[in-house]
Length: 187
Ligand SMILES: [Mg+2]
Picture (tube, rainbow, N blue to C red):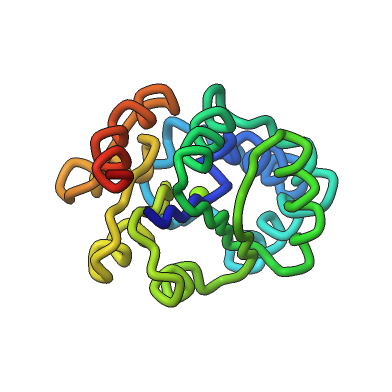
């Protein structure tokens, strides 16, 4: 099976870095629990852009701590013969640090894509399964016939409740939930 895996809020708790930068730069508090919408209305577009850029600085990329079990699970998928495409909505400028980070945490991958065209690239690559927290990407994946899976976050609760998405609260649960799908593909 061909698996695409997002980075931010999928492989690590990106919100901590995002909210730290929002607080430091603009004095805006963005508690995780309150972020029930994909649009962050309190931020102006230019503030949003500045924060995202800073979260993808080399220093911030390299200090991200993977969720427990994420690396082990993705490694097992690769060892089982699945093709692993890591994909992140971040500038290509962050590619080198991102690659360094993946190596540093010991996450093996076949392909890395740092760009803003995630779903079209997944379609080009004939991806079967997308692990991504974004409700927008989940809906677009479904439109393209790609199976979505995600960790549950406040901002994707609604889409997870109404759409055909594999949902888990952590990587141990996600690994178990995807086992039947990935085992079927291996036979
Ligand atoms: Mg994400």
